[in-house]
Image (cartoon, rainbow, N blue to C red; front, side, top):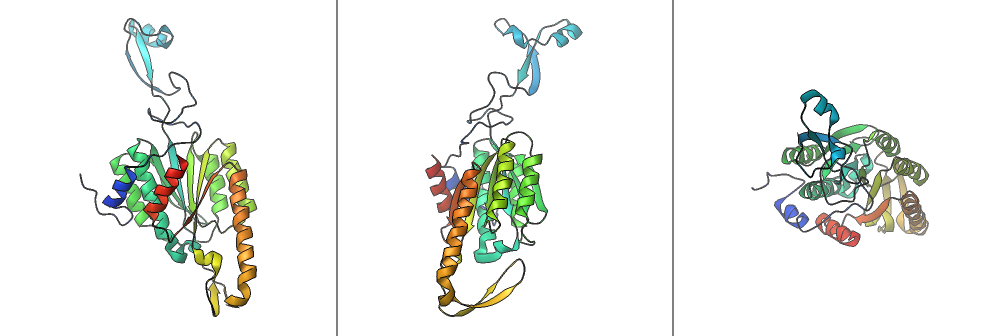
Length: 291
């Protein structure tokens, strides 16, 4: 069946994702049998339904309460918890307007959600800046993907960064062990970031950080007097790019080093992605590296 027309996901993307595999790097909890290592052994803790006892069934799974009510033997059935629950967290602060990072983030999110659904894993979506703009719980059905893609298409950068506060809230409120896939330019205090990521790890969530960058943010490739515009505070300053470049590049490299260290120290899987690389190629490369 052909895909509906989406701006954030195409049939070409679907073909590319169908050749990939996304595996959790630690134990996960979910709701159906899947390909990921479970923290449980044998029957899981979530009850599903009964069936009648047949010779050879393990007696420890007999439901004695059901027997007392019906005078018949029933076996408790459970759902094995070995699939992955992922929440894709997109930074929608105004800094994501630069170099069309927001569009890039939407395409990445759609591709990852589709890839997870192919594996019968669950993908949810949260879009945040200084507040929660979009929130969809994890799911994997075709209608769920449709809702997610259409929600992605409606996202526009609109607020100031308060990503750290939102990450703390997600870490505290997310049910059971989850994977958070954060897509952001990460222009925030690395010390505050590490505390938020450590909070999530303390709650036994997994973390993947996709750090979106444009090379102009690192190299300052201008040869004249230019105006720098802060997209979140609206502040503007005039600079001479040639004079400022050496000190600017050093400060940016120091910042990137601290940001990577913040992720590593928190047990987060960190990936730097330059937005001049086509998103599908970047994602294929990332998944191949993870294998």
